[in-house]
Image (cartoon, rainbow, N blue to C red; front, side):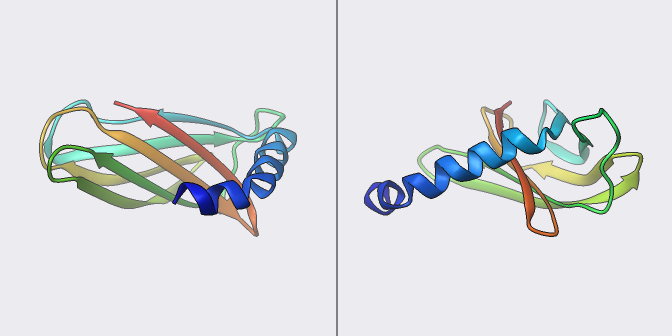
Length: 114
C-alpha cells in the first residue's frame, strides 16, 4: 500500500542508513533455470570482509505474470559466511528476489533480478 509506505518513509530511510553503516555485504548465487535440484546460495561478510555466521536468512522469489508465482526458502548456515538451501522455480522466466539476513535485530536486505 503506497499510502502506508509513505507514512513510514522516515523509518525506511533510517533502516537503509543503518544497513549502510553496519557495512555488511552479500553475494548471491542463484540457479538460472527451473526445476528440482537447484540450490540458492549467498555469502555474507562484515565490513572487515570477515564471514558472518549465525544469521537467519530468508529468500523470497516472485514472478509476476497473470498468475503470480512465489517461491520462499530459509537458507541454512553452511559455515564461513555461506548460506544455502534447495530451491525449485516452477517455471523459467524473470524472477525478482528479496533476501533478508537477520541476527539479533541487525538486518541486511537486498533485491535482485534473475
